[in-house]
Image (cartoon, rainbow, N blue to C red; front, side, top):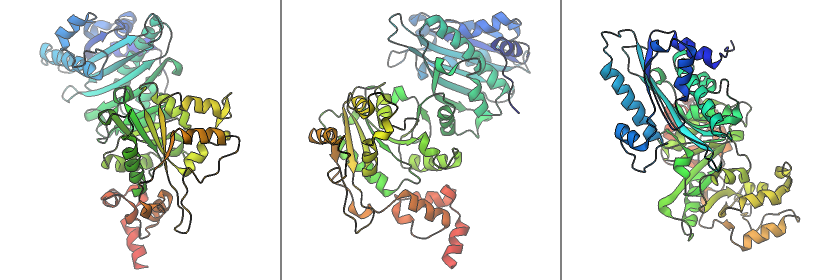
Length: 477
């Protein structure tokens, strides 16, 4: 059944009329945009215990403490605000007088667009809330990038977004995916981008935040999300800002010895570059949304299986909607001007010089490569050898269309395209698609192609359709 979308004032009123929902609002930066809706709609005395805006930095520091980096619009500041305000509710409101009330603490810290309009604005927003007076509270926090061109418009959007969050947490909490979609109720997609979200608490014990990241891209809320080895979502700006970036794109279905050799050899080449600081280097395994849709609709379990292995290998994963490499590099350029590296196989290199991928650009392939190499970018090419009888293919042996050959030769001669030479020749015939087929069909001999312990993980958790029963039947045959 399709959800009926209420207006912002209807949502605020429904919260106000619920005598068991009671809490505080603390808003920094954009003004008290969220709580204003609850005051305007009427009945706010039954919902609002306190509202405040510590707009002055010294006041804010006195209440919430200082940040190590001196910034105010950060996840750390938001969490301190929520923690502090929720603690005050529990400290100052007697449970004897409020036995049935579910407490909440709403907070946001926002920087809206500046007067030169060069800085578009961004913010953090979160809610700590109870669903039962006797239970521990839950948290939902997220980061937004604002796109509107006027501060007052951004402020209005922040107000609507905050009401959506509070309403969703109390009325749509049994469906986290729908709760996530509801954040855009009465807000056009072009106005804001949500690029990081985190759910935690007893109400969300079954929620995998990596899956929530996927939902952000799937629902068009952002074009890229990142999660770390622990499976926790990471704000892209926080991870990539002023960093050297090295990325490997693949299906990783499953991740094989070839994938690890690509990242190992690509890394060893990249760190030799004069402009690469090993201490500021971020390595990413990237999966495109298009790759996740390779068999039609996105299979969430298949996505989690890939993520499970990459996280177990200690890798940071980027999920993006940037099918073309130039769009991926353009995305990285939001956050850094430092040298970047892309690791790719010979097949991907050939596709990079295929004009059909750039028909939507007025300048065609030249425009795409203008974007690619307007940044300080290096491409590292891993060789290909489909069979032991085949010749090894690298950047010197592939055939490039004559129209693009001068561009290709220019990039080769200027060492913008570099062959990886210290690869492992013993593993070139390993292909993920073959390994996946063997795992699913219960065939023998797939373990050798995987990094240490990954085969055990696949067996123990039944990843990629592995069935011990199928394997046993095959062995008897």
